[in-house]
Figure 1 (cartoon, rainbow, N blue to C red):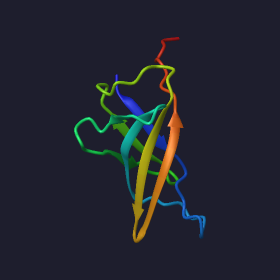
Figure 2 (figure 1 turned 45 degrees about the horizontal axis):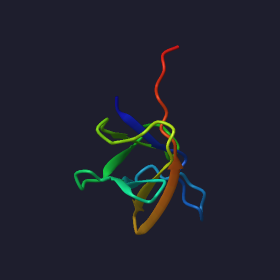
Figure 3 (figure 1 turned 120 degrees about the vertical axis):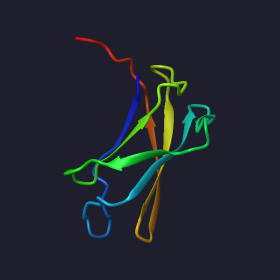
Figure 4 (figure 1 turned 90 degrees about the vertical axis):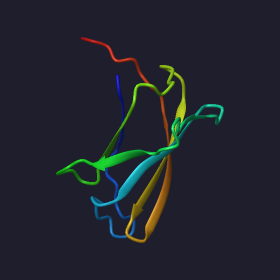
Length: 100
C-alpha cells in the first residue's frame, strides 16, 4: 500500500487568499523519539496541487517507509510560494486500512 499525505487549505495569512501554485514537499518524517524514518533515499516527497481545490496538496509515499500503525510521527513540510518560505510540522498516526 502507498501512504497518502494531504495538506489542506494552504493560504496566505496576510491576504487569506488560497495558494494554488506553491512548491510543497515533505522533507523529513520523524518517529515520536525524534528519530528520522524518512528520507530513506535522501529525496523529499513532492506534494502536488490538487486541481480545482482551494490550496490542497497531496503527496504519495512508497509503502517501503517503516511506519507502525498506531505509533506517533511528525511530518516536516516545506512550502515555497514566490519569495515566501514556510515550514510546518504535522503530527500524525498511521492507520491500518480495513475493508468494510
